[in-house]
Image (tube, rainbow, N blue to C red):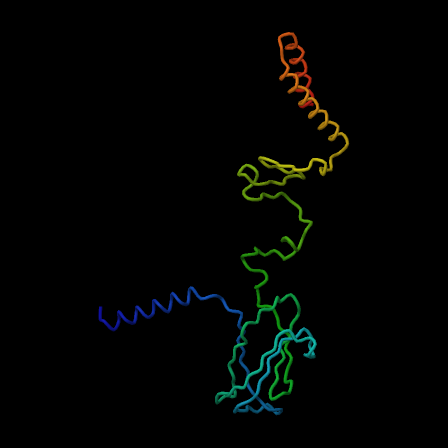
Amino acid sequence: MKKGLKVLLFISAIFLLDFISAAISDDMHLNVQVRDSSGTIQTGTFAFGFNISTASDCNTDSVVFANATTQATDARGIVSYYLDDVSLNFTDQYYLCYYRDGTLKSASQMARVPYAFNSKFLNGYQSGAFFPFNTSVTGDFDFNGGWEAGGITIQGGKIYADTGFFYNLSKLNLAPSTSILLAAIITGLVFFLNSLANLNNSSLLHVVGLWLKFKLLIDS
């Protein structure tokens, strides 16, 4: 391989790596062709203003982005220009307001790019199908792989998890029958453990009987 070709490939590889690692910018590219009121193409140097507004009349109170520059056209009367750092949320309807030499020339409604809000990454769903836009979704869900993988599963109105930690049982909003059952189970377990601690031969049958009653209560 010739030395010149090696150098060319090396430079090309550096350029490619730099291109891949570069962050995606928030710049907006504009092409403007200057014409007079009769439609005739004008060439020369002009003072341009490019504002983004939430109102179609481009009033100053509605401006959310402003840019001013002086640029020279090419032979076709065209100016190619980038608006830097247009970091808007794009949840409102915006208008691009184009000024030339201090005079508003046009206000263009900005439209969404076709398919941008229905891309393959959203699988065709509207934003209302996702949290936090919709807090009343329906269906079955697995979080972190589901309960069998150490996560949580919501299925048929029931919550499944491998382990649950409740730091304040008084905050649990249980049905009256469930509260009574839970209290009975806890009371029975405490009594059973106390009986085991004081176990002797004469009370063995009594403790076994308590355990059977406790077991029946749990299984019921």
